[in-house]
Length: 490
Image 1 (cartoon, rainbow, N blue to C red):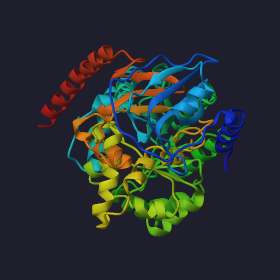
Image 2: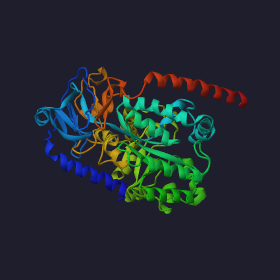
Image 3: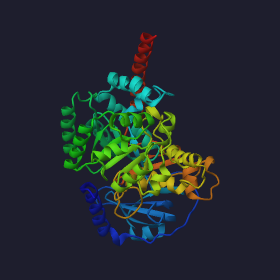
Image 4: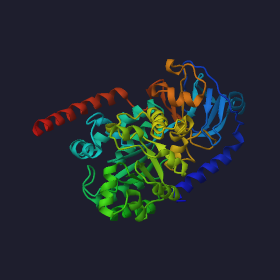
């Protein structure tokens, strides 16, 4: 096990030991009910707060559910989980956040996206992947992506994700240092992946410049409580074998994760096979660059033997069902990967290929897509789909000991989901309600590291009016550029 995961486990165990005396017994129960949400600010240092008045869905190993439950938070970490009565007795002086009959659950984990691409939302649709990339996205990025672009795109993405209950995400893009600054301001948790190519990128012209930028990026952010710097060789068809090995060696040296697109579509499989005589997973495995620091995005076309390679090496996978459907990349063999023991999380991909950051849609789609693909309605049941966006997503990105479930010692990243929507009435099973009926608009509150960052559809850490105005300013520039390019082409 590599050091970056060991450190998180040790930190969680130490905090759990300190706070263990606060732990309450949990009951496996369910409840209904809803009304307006009442929220106070997060707890200051040394102060405790309690999120109470709802059904707690823990997503722990036992899938514990607590009716009339509560979660106690001390200095950004979960101090206790139990019934309202138990938690109030243990924390009589704590300030309260009332869920008012909603569902208290872990924040969602978006395991793969390109967040500044919110400003390219809907730019080029209904195209094959390589056509979309090479003839539309790469040229648009060359024309518009700079530090200012990624800052505004990041702010827009944070607004969207927080409103929908996503508290952690994995990004892969350019100018990640600037992205990290904006993410820090908005209060989200993120793994931010600085991208490497064999050819010039918007932020760095040469491979040597890219490597130096990564070293500086990691040095600045490695000890941040919410931001994890990541090294991201884009894909085996855009980065040479020699450079893939160098990128992995650098990730090992700096003790950070590595993020890569892998086995995303058939064209990639053909390209890599023609170049190396191997399939994508076989190829990168032959380079010795697969271990449990690696997150592989998409993973649509692994063979059964390659799935075993992924499992044996502890590689996490980010499944992006809607994006893969939209570009017709294929259907990833998720049931087989899960059965083999691969940690599979859910990602939206970027909004240029989705076209949103709505993880609730991905949960619903993942549960249904694999049923029709296998012609088996029992595949990826609702509970499994929800875990892919919470604890299993955290496992895929190496943060399972910090987030993904409501357990003592973990970071206090949680959301309150309303259950009073017409589309939610009535319900009989809480997992069915969350997976098949709940929408992003049902999220009432989001807390990260013990701080409330969204309440009643208002993100408290980002100026929405300012961001939306800038988004439309960029839209005008990009649309004019596209119109000019089309005129020249015709």
